[in-house]
Image 1 (cartoon, rainbow, N blue to C red):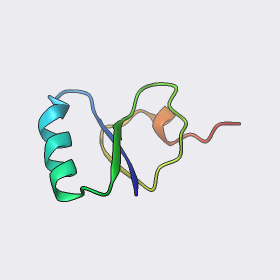
Image 2 (image 1 turned 90 degrees about the horizontal axis):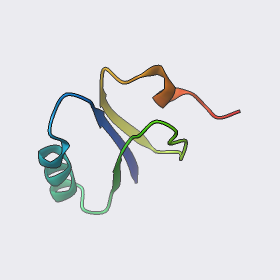
Image 3 (image 1 turned 120 degrees about the horizontal axis):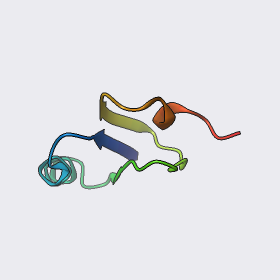
Length: 56
């Protein structure tokens, strides 16, 4: 399972630690502009539109 995480106004380390503990089989990454690698799920808060755009 591939998960994208995005929240711009918080320390993501606590979130990532907790998610990885609860979902040890998941591949979790913090989304960065330009990231177009597919994911199965997104955990986001106020994500930019670019996060959801499909590459052409």
